[in-house]
Image 1 (cartoon, rainbow, N blue to C red):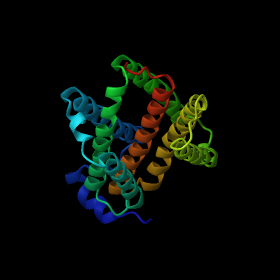
Image 2 (cartoon, helix red, strand yellow; image 1 turned 90 degrees about the horizontal axis):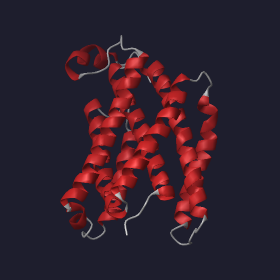
Image 3 (tube, rainbow, N blue to C red; image 1 turned 60 degrees about the vertical axis):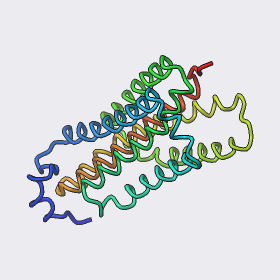
Image 4 (tube, rainbow, N blue to C red; image 1 turned 90 degrees about the vertical axis):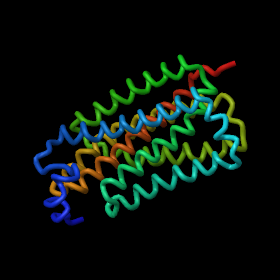
Length: 240
């Protein structure tokens, strides 16, 4: 893609687009900041829905869980497929919209699991995620070779997830959870390293660099959330 010099030269000052002088470190920090904002929105909405009791009313609406799932998938697909055509504001709005929808869904976990268990597993997720993100950022090794393995693992998890809707997994579910954690930790390192590739490719296009930052933040957000969910399934303490 050719850099959009018109966007870059005219819009930077007024709309917060990345400056040409932005360093890789600043770009990485910006990306992780968006990821943390997304997580904050999700868990804030989730706890708010639980604390106010609104979640009990929301899920009385017929077919709402299916509608939420479809809406979440649609937002991710739009952001992934149309990232080059979207404005910076639209990309950010889609990301925050996804975080809000996910927060509504996550409210259910506050009903099912003890609060102390949720906090402990969130802290564990943050620790594991941080270690692998740091590795992905600092390693000299090219992690692109991991992509086929990670994608294959993701397909495996999706197939098992579909089968679990019809067949009980029993004790195998715990093994599946560990595999899921391992796969998304691998994605964490891979997606963190990929931030550098986006920075190098779009460094002369301020608007595209901002959108790539949001897209990377979404990928890291999804990695964090999936690690959290698999750990929760593996060791979460349910309410009586």
